[in-house]
Length: 490
Image 1: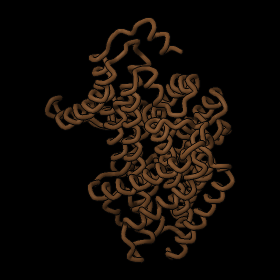
Image 2: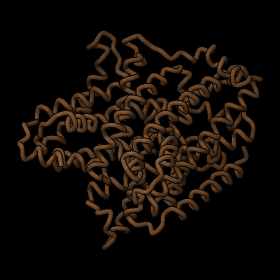
Image 3: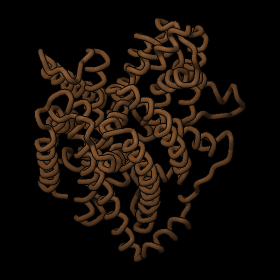
Image 4: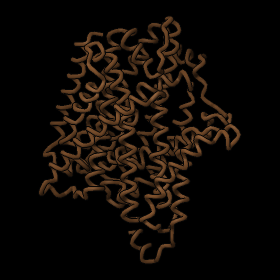
């Protein structure tokens, strides 16, 4: 594809986002940046959250992953339904009842200062890693499509990507994100639909024919029952449920969008509709993955060494110009839909959880401090992406879930203990427990085949990590007094 066309597409898309930012940012005050004044329509949030949840990982990595794991990922997706139901019925009512801006301030009310800061720290760690993985994937494709031909190094393409995101988010924050996510979701779905249509046209298959081709292919196996296999159904299903809970319900990035809805009823409607549509979209992405492999095999196209490169390679080098354009639009949307909200959430959490911002107070240096924090996290993402490029050798989606198992586990344990026990903890020991739990989980993971007769942990290491945290909190716990119980329940 012509490099100037690529530049034109990206710049045009970027200008559209800038325009949306200008229309939605208003005065650019902290209340708008952090909460969108709690006036977001629930259906807009639901549709936009699909794009933020999918990100570049689903857009590129899930179709490529089908070659190695077939449709086993659908077992994880089924678990999402259970996880999102827990979020809608347990976590959202809690957050709205406490009128939270940062969801981690719950931990201070329940346990104390150190628990609060520990929870917020693990979110920052988790989201920096997750957002960097996603941006790394997309920056790599832009490098392949554009910057390699011009001799521009990878770090420059990453810097440009992050700079564009920073420009349209630093004023409007979450209010801008709610609107841009909606646009980005639309572009992603258009790109996927166009690719499937063109593959069907090339293979001379109707919609029914495409479904039949997928079912008859070697890629359509969904159910895996071998207990020692990391793709075992029960491991995948319950891992999916807990991944949904921690990466959405215990994640400031995703919950910040929900908390912009007008009330709890709207937020719950958002979650239920979001769940239903997301499951359907995930099925479409798996089907696209199978069709990409079928298309490549039929046309004698050599598969790339990295499965993540399959969709970009076919779209940019083998499909029509229209497919290439829609792919780049979808890819750019995928990059921005996850990274822009992540950057906003990181800024929110650091300002509220560590700098003690009052979102209703714009006096003093609040706006300039928020500006500097936003810039700081942009630079942190930039550095993390470069580190990840140097060390990663696996599918990005596998890397994302693996990292989540270790970084979100302490949050899972903290919230589970807070919600399902009446015990208080020795607050100053909570950071020790939350650091030891991932370490113990990692040791258990690398030793599991020896200790458990060939058993391999998959994404369920997240559950193990959360369990270690829960048990550690129980060990350092004490019974709550009646006065403390009254304060906690307020």
